[in-house]
Length: 126
Image (cartoon, rainbow, N blue to C red; front, side, top):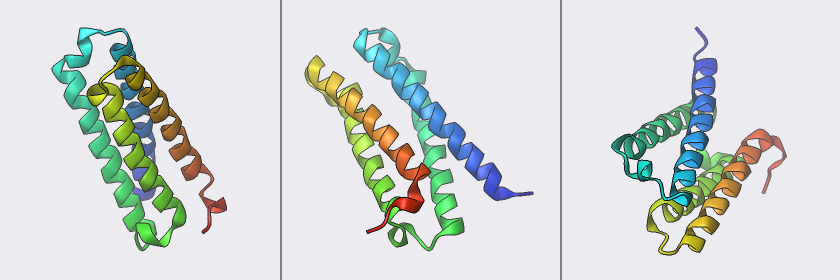
């Protein structure tokens, strides 16, 4: 059984699910929908993100000597931290609606930058 393919496809599935769940919660934030505060909307994304992070770490451990040996992995890690901060501002900590909207858009752009970094990692060097 090829564990790499299983981990990779689970990781990619979680990437899609995390984007969908974040976008849905962003839509609920914009429309001020009460579903944003539903217990499932508050727990399921954390489960998806935990699986996403676990599979990502597993893939790094399997094929690389660590995050610090690959420049593209460092960029992804930095992008992930920025995505988390912007997502938290968009969905929870942004005090005004314009700040939340700007944070939501910034989180989406950061997400797509992370995808581009993963896709074109061979071209990233320091």
